[in-house]
Amino acid sequence: MASGSTKIPDDFNIYYLLKGALPLDTSGEPMDRARGETKSPYQGLTGLRNLGNTCYMNAVIQCLCSVAPLVEYFLSGKYTTSLDKDNGEIATAFAYLMNDMWLGDFDCVSPEVFRLVIGERYPAFIKKTQQDAQEFLIYVLNELHEALKKASKRRSQGTSSSTWETRGSVSESSIITRLFEGHLSYDTICLECQTTTYKTEIFTVLSLPIPYESECSLEECLECFFQQDMLTWNNQVNCSCCGIKTDAAVKASVAKAPKIVIFHLKRFDCQGNYKKKLTTDIYYPLINLDLSPYIYPLFRKNPKYSLFAVVNHFGDLDSGHYTAFCKHTITQNWYNFDDAQISEIPESSVQTPAAYLLFYSSQTFSVPVKSQNG
Ligand SMILES: [Zn+2]
Image (cartoon, rainbow, N blue to C red):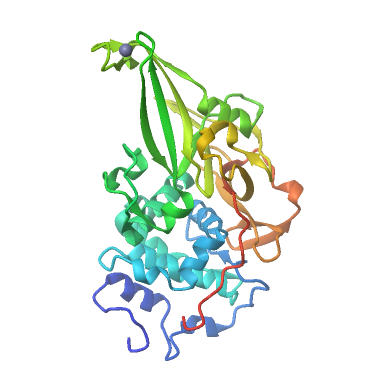
């Protein structure tokens, strides 16, 4: 296959895959587009084919596709300047997918190439079995960060969380950290000598406990997450002042609030052999979510957040189905994305007991623009 029209080197498997799946004609446009499926009425309203239990993937991709600044970064071609050429397959496939979903040429596209490249790294995602949407989201964000990171001058902020274990102590920034990264501060006070120690942890997704069985509010989940915990018995901490293990109290606060905050509602309760899905009806605000009670007073800059996307999970633990609700940047209407099917829904339908991942933004998105020459 001729590669003259592309800037893509031939020695990457992914590019063979991309070319195989979307053969490029002389203008550099994939020829597939000429096959004439119905044109979607709006950019960014494109369904995703189900490739066999890939609804978890489709729902997450739709939510990421509604993060306008992320989409713009890929549509504008800005990502190519930061791309790690030796580790760029997943980010490149993601960029192609965002382009296809935002061109508005099709009602529906296939995420097959993206799934294949991510499956090379994480074989679980190539199996035709249901996976956890939250785990998939974290893998995707982590891979995009790894492919697009640049060493940053800002000071490293203490220890990293399990999500970012591979990052080490050097502070690195990427489109992912700029949009999604927040910092938690854990203040631990020794109950013997009252000495307080501080530890910072990075997060991109906050996993919130669900404190009630039948119904509760998102704020109650947040209060539960940020409440003070006692560290006793096996959980005692080594106090450097006392020189021994002592009882302590620990409290988390947000030291840096991300522009986009993603909440994972811990509906899947697994303790040993005991597994259960919590179907609690959780009330979450569509606008004006106030995070200021949980943010260090010094750092309260944009504490009001608006909901713009939701991943829903229906059914039980091992089977079940994922869909997404996303607010469209152009029309400002909400849509239900159920694999290939898209339907407009009223704002009043966005609140359901199926909500599993909630995406909030502190800023209003502008419509992503595709570069003129790309
Ligand atoms: Zn002490």
